[in-house]
Amino acid sequence: CRAALDAEVDGREGLNYLWTPDEAMAAIASLDDASRAEAIEALGLDRPNFRDPHHADAPPMIVPTRRPWRSSPAVDAACAHLLTARDARRGPRRDTKIILEWNGLLVEGLAAAGMVLRNERMIARAATIAEAIWAGHQHAGTWHRTQIGSTLGPPATLADLACLGLGLETLWRATGEEGWLTRAQAIERHARVHFSHDGRWWANLGGDGLPVRIRSHHDGAVPSGLGAILDLQVRLALAARDRPEGREALDALAASIHAESGTIMANPVGLTWAVAALARAMREGLVQGSASSRAPGPPVEGSTRRIVCTESGCTVEWA
View: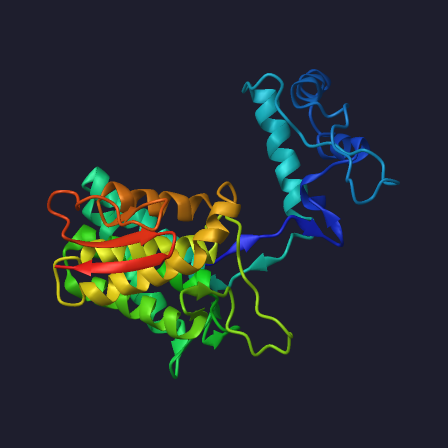
């Protein structure tokens, strides 16, 4: 996942894809009268339907849209002429950087889809991408958010590392290969060292000259750093529950819940990823809580290793 086209050309949004009526008519001028009339009606070439909200003084433009959607020799010929004219225009800029966060989510999606569809090619593709970003986005102990060729960009954010960890953990479940889980655990530890203090999470490394560090409290098109790291911690705690390293994973998750539960309760709609992760932890008996200072009831059957949360804090039971 390495390239995207911007929509902006010469400071105008979508200019490469927009037409004035005169431009549209010039592009299809070589068609015969009947074909041209059919194309104008089908594509709405005489009815401007877009106005740039950032340039209120600009005339309305046309985004060709088949109305209703249909194909005919005349319409297809008009579209071919419009495409030829558009290809001769100045195009939007192409962004070729590789973003760690997005590729971590891509690895997770491919690996998860491969498991559900029993598609080994998807899982293998996820593994190839994971190896590439593991090798390409870190240098001298520092992870980087972007890569363009051999050039590394700014330091990685919490969301970058957490999403990479989610992809690696999903690959472990898809393949059963311990190396992926080991890497996911290493990513979580690295994030704890550099982005957390007593369970409280910061979105960036700091040291950028700002007087305060940034915190992320909202999911968007991608999960927030806080939501993604809590999801990763829940998954790793479940994965290591019956292993010697499971105590470390439970301790880390307990610290995060204790420090960030107020943030999540204050904004559950904005942090739905974190809410979903904690709901899973409760369903699996990994976390049990009480609204008072008294401990909750006995553990769920088979879950003697758990986090117990009361109004006074969270503790780990390790039997």
